Length: 211
Image (cartoon, rainbow, N blue to C red; front, top):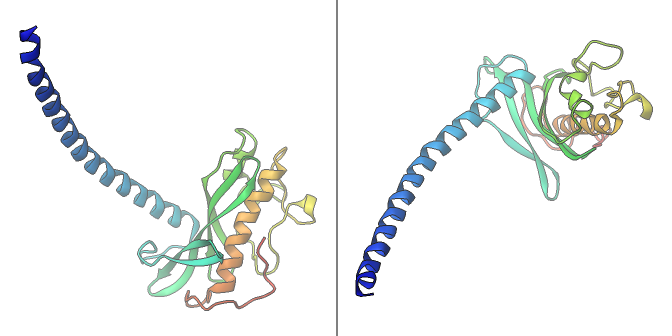
């Protein structure tokens, strides 16, 4: 019994030392992993911006800013410039009305109000149906393609709602939500951004409505 008692402090000390070493190792590993994850996210963000905007030579991430769309929410803007001239902007937008809830997109516009491109950043839509939005709305088939459209003339609607955009087959709810996210991006972009300079100027067009 005495032998067991005498070894107990040694066990506790050994476990404490092991936990300390493990904690330090995890902390160091986490620091390096966190840096790698941050760098990876930055590269993915830069790639997404280049994918949806005209060519630029500035750093849109460094020049990013936010514009409020409600009391508790805002959209993030990434202005694109070439040789100092404003050429467009990438806007991170969303809709909460997808078939499975949130759909988050990045929409890119040029200086002439046209949709230059889009990327789907986040969603939980049905595989094989709603997930088709990643490519559906850029395909040159019937009235699917929305790339190059001037949203200052008309915001986007599916044909079932009186618009001129073909919804994804068997995924009208997803299609509506996706277009809502694009419309929200454009409405905020055009209402609050000088499309010549890229400067925030406040409400400028009451006719453009937020979907």
